[in-house]
Image (tube, rainbow, N blue to C red; front, top):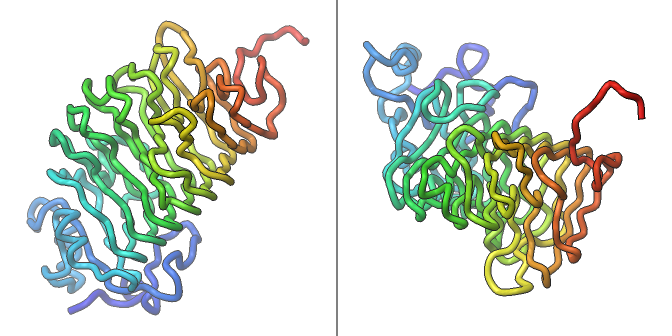
Length: 341
């Protein structure tokens, strides 16, 4: 028996109801709903028992992302709905299907790693480059955490986005969780590739400041590694890092030959916060790392940064913004005092 329709169940006219007043995010309708639970055991997993009690067949319930994803069909607005739990993967999930979506059912606050109670997909297996490698187009990810905690320089990040028009809301991305990741400049919490045009990250948390200090020069929590994707938007996002190494950045836009910028035109950071924590109060040089001979165009709207000297050290970088002056650049936070200036 399939899931009962709203108002008697969980969906309305084929469109899942996920709360927050967001409405249908998956186009004109929803395809197949595929369910994920931590265990197929009614005695230990209340979500699995609840699905059974509501007539969902075992054939529609899975315990791993790989098997759930395999049950979806691309270009049909199929949705993988994940109940709270920490789901450990031992291999990269290559997400190639267009218009196929992932929704966590633990609510919108995903600021947690895999050791805490929430909906988190993660790997701690060494040399798993990405937890999810996304090349599908126009996919939606909601209310989900994705981690990569493998202790190896080849555990690059939890998510590599290399597809058009993908949308992320209330998503937490945490990489750089183990010593060998923290020390390697290829590791990040998000990689952005050539085809990641027009993607949006809304209310997302990217990076962490509790798993150790990053020390790899010119590394970033966000790392652009493709050939200049255009039109990306980060809105209401918080970027977090821990480092006392001056050359460690939050966003890296340059890796490779001189002059080879990896970020394209039209990238906007709207109402975002960039926080670097270190116990010695030593600020890092720059939020955005670039090459001295390349170009970089970034627009900031109502953003602030703490733990950095400048938005960018490079004279070729054009970081434009709407923030009032603080220190030597708009939006760079400084200590507030009682005295009136």
